[in-house]
Length: 56
Image (cartoon, rainbow, N blue to C red; front, top):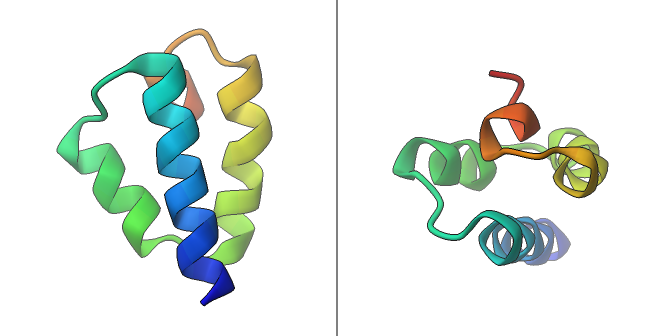
C-alpha cells in the first residue's frame, strides 16, 4: 500500500510542477518500483522540464 501512495505523490508533484502529465510518463510512474520513485522525487524539484525528470 505504501508503494501506491508514493506513486500518487509522485504523480501529484509532477502535475503541480509541469501541468498535464503525458500518458507515457504516467505509465512509467504507475509501473515503477520504489527505488525508481525515490529517484524521481529529487529530479522533480531540480528539473526544468518533465523530459528532464525522465532523462530525455
